[in-house]
Amino acid sequence: MNIYETDYTLWKQQQIEALAHKDWDAIDIKHLIEDLEMGDPRKALRSNLIILIAHLIKLYVQKDAPDWMTNSWYNSIDEHRARIRNDIQDGILKRYFPEAVKIAYPQARKLAILEGKRADGRKIKKRLESEYPDQLPDGWLEKLLDDEWYPNTVIGFEKN
Image (cartoon, rainbow, N blue to C red; front, top):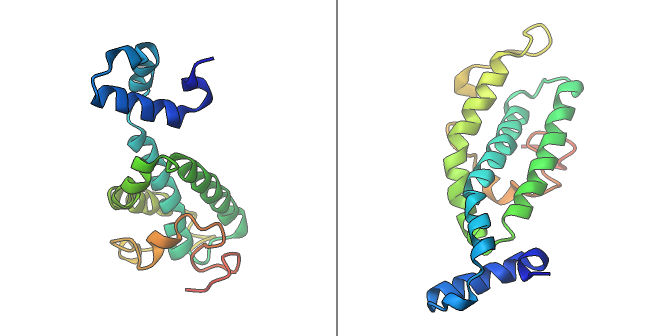
């Protein structure tokens, strides 16, 4: 069994070193091509951040949303936090995380606004676009991946 299949991180580091030292015999061409074809992992990170942040924004803004609505947001938040934590185990993505949040936030805000516009006005108050924060609220970057934190909720053990 190839190290690519048993320890991807070690395999990747070995490939980086082999390329840096022009050690052509140590390069695992088959798996390197396969890895390159998978695409940019930063896109997956940003995609997961968009969904995570959009649901957090909705919890923050739509404080009167019924439980049947917010429960699906909580589930999505939990799922995307787990995906992101898994993605950023790689040192490069961990360093990229703050920049990815900055890039994802405007798209997440737009998504939250669009979903909010589709809310049933009889069950939940329709919010103005101006109620959705223009930028990531203070302190959120540090809390985004905290399983104990949700804005404006008792579940999050914190009231904003």
